[in-house]
Image (cartoon, rainbow, N blue to C red; front, side, top):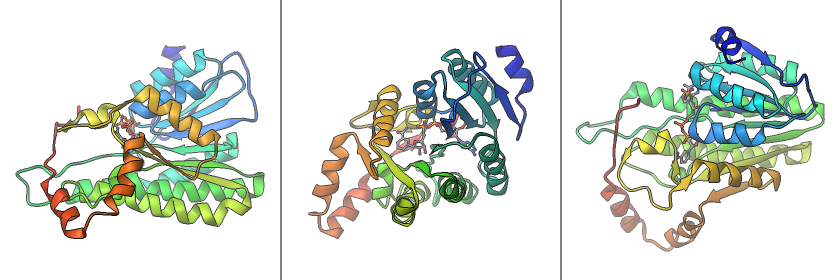
Length: 280
Ligand SMILES: NC(=O)c1ccc[n+]([C@@H]2O[C@H](COP(=O)([O-])OP(=O)(O)OC[C@H]3O[C@@H](n4cnc5c(N)ncnc54)[C@H](OP(=O)(O)O)[C@@H]3O)[C@@H](O)[C@H]2O)c1
């Protein structure tokens, strides 16, 4: 089956893999399914009677996770797509919604970047990609999901933000502001859609042990494993929480930081020196 998957996955194409011929109405679409958090989410959601629509960029990891989820009994469809292309993402969503009617959409794909210590600014090209993948495309996809779900009996959408969105980080203005924008969008859209049958959960993780955070050169306080993160995220979605910040020390920090004078806050933020390793 792995070989069949490898042969059939192509850029921009949706590929069907059916385990045991089972289909159910329950269907989950997940972006970032090839990432540290996304793979764990996909594995946990995989079960007989549930359809998974897995989006990612890396074809090998997409095949790997599709095969695992298929072996766990899900009907799995994969889509290899680059979310820098927002128009293509919207067209792909339209096609996948028409075919699978996902009642849960988890928008987890994301990019991070830290300004190199020897550089005057971030790289404008990376800033553009980051704004697209972390903010513009997920916000457009969430809107497309709600637009389809509302006349079809409702559904639920989860967006993955970051605690970085709480802080105006001088070492990564583009990442922190993209996640801050996602946070604001989630709160506003949640209010707009809640009485129309569409729930929205904003997941706000601290440091999770995935390839993204392993690139950081610096401390990763209160680190959570990807497995544990996936378990907590699914619990928050099941409870239909509006916002879920984890692990708990970051919730406590939200309260404490309100007591800080702005000048002290800025001094602390300026003193954060973080490097990053090259992407593998
Ligand atoms: N790890 C942390 O400490 C942490 C903390 C707070 C928030 N988060 C957020 O959690 C989410 C998942 O992150 P992770 O830790 O699992 O990171 P990861 O292992 O680096 O995975 C990132 C995922 O995003 C996908 N992606 C990146 N750029 C893409 C693009 N242009 N088009 C399509 N897909 C793209 C990747 O696809 P490919 O691998 O196929 O390229 C991968 O599936 C992100 O939104 C991240 O910002 C992570």
